[in-house]
Length: 95
Image (cartoon, rainbow, N blue to C red; front, top):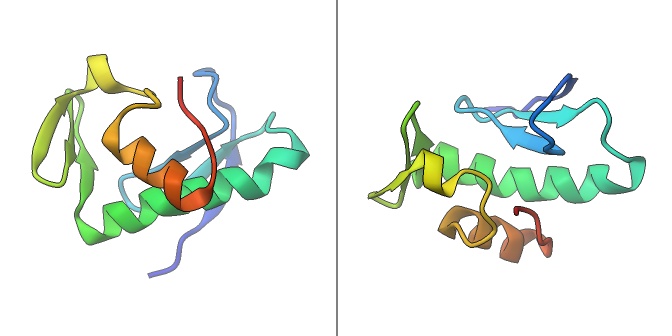
């Protein structure tokens, strides 16, 4: 399965996102010098989505069989899926 990367309008103040279908969206305002590192970080999430390690719905994240409340964990640097993606990509994204 291929992963597409597209630029979108995003008002959530994020540089990139992984979709539940395993694609990547980048903010249309992403600085040029961040594109490669954000894609590398998001590819970690893509791998997790495709392997079934990471999923989400409107209310929760599901990481390796454990449920996390989305309102509490959205975008946090200390979320286990963010720690994993940051470690693999050598980045430090999240709040």
